[in-house]
Structures are given as C-alpha cells and as structure tokens.
Length: 301
Image (tube, rainbow, N blue to C red; front, top):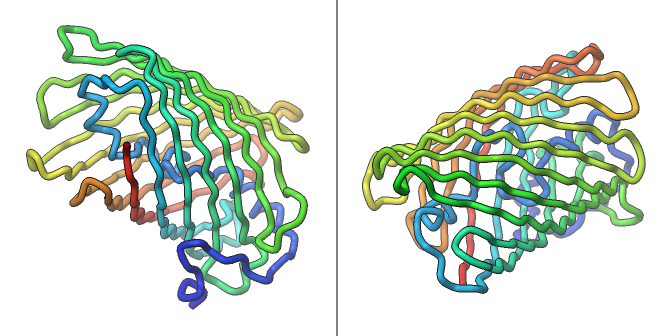
C-alpha cells in the first residue's frame, strides 16, 4: 500500500506524468486548505471554531497552526459519467492562520496551507498532486433576536497553485473571489440550524473560469452536552456556469457529518455524502458516493 510510505510531510513521489483531463477536473473540485468546505463535504466547518462562534472574542490578535490528515474514498474518483473508477486518496495538510479582531463583529483572517494528495492505486499515481494556497477572509457577524440567531457576511479572496508531485511549473494557478451570507439559529444549546448562500468566482491563469453558487441547509446537533461531539446532516445545491463556454452544471449533495473533539487540540470527523451532478455537457455529468475521514491537530493561541 502506498499509504505506508506517505508520512505527515508527504515526501514527493517520483511520478511526474501529466494528470489526465478528468483528474484535473476533479482536482479543481478539491479544497486545498483542508478546512472541509468543498462540495463533497457539504457544510462541514472547522469544528474547533464552532464553539468560539458563540462566545465573545476579546483578543485583538489570535492564530492557529494545524496539521490535518484526510483519507478520502469514492466510487467515482475522477467524477466521470462512464468508466467509473473507485479509488481512495490520502491527503496531508499543513497550515497556519492569523486573525485580527477589529471589534465584536468584524474579523480578518489570513491563512496559508500546503497540501499533498496521493492516490492509493499505483495506476493513478500520475494524477497525484500538491497544492499551496494563500487566503484572506473579512467576516462581519452580528447576533440578532436577543442572541438567538446570528447573521454573517464573509468576503474572501484566495490564490492557489497545483503542482505535480515531482515539482516543476504549476499545473494550475487560480484566483478565487467569494461572498455570501450565513444565517444560524440557536433555539437551545444542542440544536443549531444553519442556512447559507455563497458565490464564488474562479479566475485561473489558463483555462476557463467559472461562477459558482452554493446553497446550504443543515443543522448542527450536540447530543451529549459538554462532550464536543457533533452530528451535522445537511444538503447542498450548487450551480456552476463556465465563463468561456455555454457549459452549466447543477449538483445536489446530501451529507452526513459526525465530528468529535476529545482533546482541545485534536478532532476527528467522519463524512459520508452522495453527489448527483447534471450538466448540459454530457461528458461532465457524474454521480459519486464518497466517504471521508479527517484527523486534525491544531493549536490555537
């Protein structure tokens, strides 16, 4: 198994072959930051920040360093309509962020993440890749309805590069800009329904950019008070239109996430999802069942 040779620092493998077009398309749907926001994961957030959203933050400057491990398996690893191939990936993420708190409502978060993705099957090793991402997000969040609900407005930009595992020039360089609105309701201490809408504009250095609209509806359940164990059923609808063609994609992704943080610096997430993506370009349609396991180490200061 290749996984036995991939350590936390994910030393580069020898393969330098050009990834296939299907693999490059699948890479574009991955989340290079490891925070769990790409469409297969649905509404999974960085759970170590979930509780802090409900508390008043008084420090003006805070930060985090983290090392995440992700084991991802799919019955359609390259998101193809035909010749579906099952495989799994091991991904390692190393990152850090710095947060500036201007006041109780306005925060600026700057982060850098490096990621290393390795396929389990040797036949797919030519599609392995590494990424580096710098991201900034300005968030305005305020509590309403006597602190029973919150409204957040995030504005962000991000620059990502994708590399072959053997190094060399980037395979892809993409600027992404996004904005949206998030509404969370806190009827009690154990149930937090959430609705969000997010818009993304991707602008790659080469190739076609796209506009993406995500609508998320979900609920965070805390079955055991004080245990930092969360259950999050959710559903996401995504609409994408590609800027240099007439292609449009529409996808539904129901997701079930469980997250447990037994220690203040360690958490484990298990995610199952199904994606049904339709497109006016038949070769871009796909269905996929996926399972993801996250192990996350982090230190907040």
